[in-house]
Length: 187
Image (cartoon, rainbow, N blue to C red):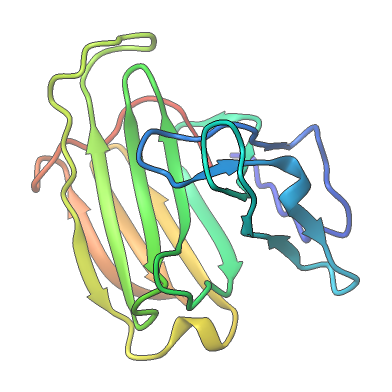
């Protein structure tokens, strides 16, 4: 088991990728220029009203260069409280699409939206059947936008556990209500 800890004193291009793409329902285009590391070693992902050829806004997205199969994935962050914005921490892959999400919606930063998407098949499968989203809305009991908190996905072959500041907030087992993703994903 390999552990990667990044405090963002500098950006390690061997470990991380700054995305320069988007996805169909996203209103922003990801741009590496919207990522900055402050003197406090805190990474900042910036949203800009900036018209591109495909979107009216730009933002930032960082993902692991390596794909991982199972493990514990943790991020300490303070999400935006701006309505319409989503701060997300997730594992994902395409072909077939599989995803495990933590999202904080700017319109209500006292809740987490947790989700799993699962399409069957092996690496490279492009079939879109089986696509499932099974969201769960979790009351945090605090406003996440006021300070940094620790968000965690623990992913095993038979279950997924989500934690906030070490406290278990949700657990999902295989086929309850979706299969557990079974292929390597980027964080």
